[in-house]
Length: 348
Image (cartoon, rainbow, N blue to C red; front, side):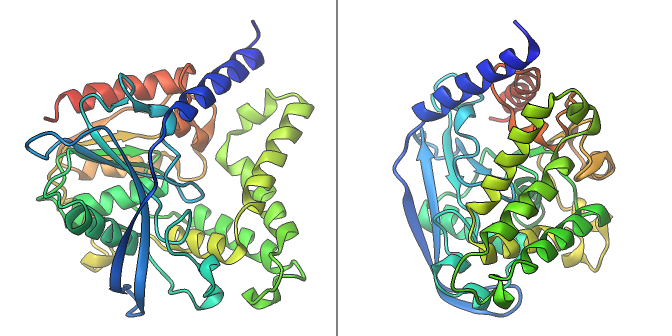
């Protein structure tokens, strides 16, 4: 069986596994939610799902946070009985971050008037859900990929009394210059669509979104990965990226990437990164991809050196930033699964 066929088989198995994960979508409402900018939303909606059962001590909850263009289903293939996030042992919470999915977002009607939000705003909304909505005082772990790792870091920094473990996939303590440039270029491409109309459009600028998705694609994989693809498969993957972006409301996508673009955990500490990372008391599992050119290894290694109880392992892969998707049955998926299982075994 060739490598291409193996990958297709693994993807098929992942989709089957994902479809088996099902939970009822629930909604938490945070009233008069104040953003870091000072803007106030009278009613902030947070969509979430839960899997498994809380134990008697109410201390087996794991919160999972998706990446910038993801949603609460991003970890479906890893959740379930006997899976990476074993629902036989854990109460797993997945959540749509502010600005997308079924949580409050510009597409609800505010468009360009939706508050400019930050990664810390996402964390604060999730903290309200966990403490007020679910009435939990501790989390076994908070984990996430890319933007989800940004959010997880903010949990560890600002609520060390609650978080007992951090799982950080393709992480960085801040958005580096190359990522910021990529976001600026994507935003410019969308703005060039005549239907954009300064963000106050009557028809979603789908063509601009498609082009932004195609521009983004080569940054989430590596050059060696692209080189080994046949032209037909490369075109297919570019089209999938374009279609994924086109499925977004343009304002929602732009504000979401703007939040990731602006992120820096040191902001709350006057720019002192060491002081920020020094707040983290929980053990942290740091899993960057060896070929990631979107966020890169430098940020992950800075976390390794700045977090007191850091476990560090680089995902061996040419999938770049996408290595964190952890498709079951692939080498990357098996590597991530083993690392997370071993880490969680130490956190009770």
